[in-house]
Length: 81
Image 1: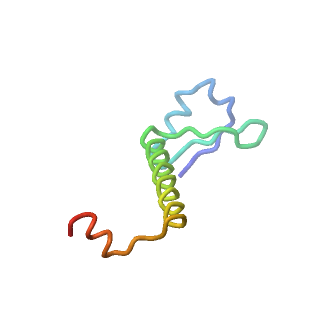
Image 2: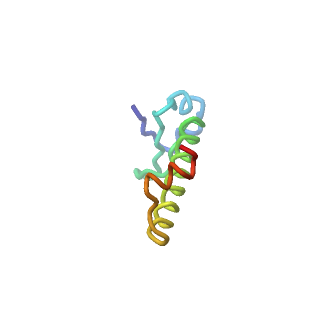
Image 3: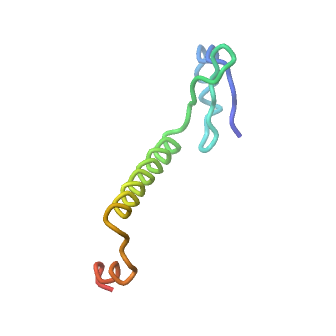
């Protein structure tokens, strides 16, 4: 579950940080609109790893579209199976 708090609650940041947990961010609002998200380092690392994975998959897809796809037989030969 996530929490929504006004950014002014950061005056007492320890209370805000108590509500932050893995897969449970705290969203901070400014003038009633979402402005910031406070997440754990574990969640941040997961997000960056996911973004990196998708970027690499996109590169592979673009390369396949440009140079053609490899068959399963070709891949097995490349890895020695």
